Image (cartoon, rainbow, N blue to C red; front, side):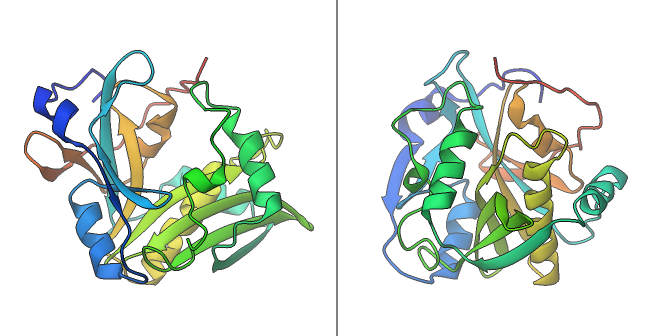
Length: 240
């Protein structure tokens, strides 16, 4: 998985589609789209297998965790303990001015981030109920919001829709923490899958998503989910 995958050429042409949400609280529909490799963006289900808007051109590979038999690693358990001093709240998604400002500061860490992109690119105005029930993990240092993870619920799955955090907290792992909280929520709700979004087919800043047990990736050639070995080495790859 650390080399560019051989992705059929026709996916570069056909597997680039947007489908608008058409119903509220349609959990079963969300499960179907996620199972087929789609992701959520704003008002659409989004399907694409190639990242060609930055160099090098590479594959976009959906990831999920099979929750049956899943266990957190020792380092992930330590991450929970590291953040016990913070207040963590789960509530319906509410896109606020403070969260928009946190998003704007957070996106600066990504070299390919667009100056025109705001939080509504990933979360529509009714994200708390469209395309299904949407929740958020809010993390507070005293009264200050420092991280937020947004996710949507299917009948059998939880989808990690987006995450933001205060990048000035360099001694924390806030992005990892909100993600772990979402997985913990999915486990307590007895869901079958937790969808992580996507990784790239080459080493990248998204390689932290490979550091979980029970990983599966969507194989664009076979059109099915396949097992992926957990990454145990520390790549520490950063965007330049």
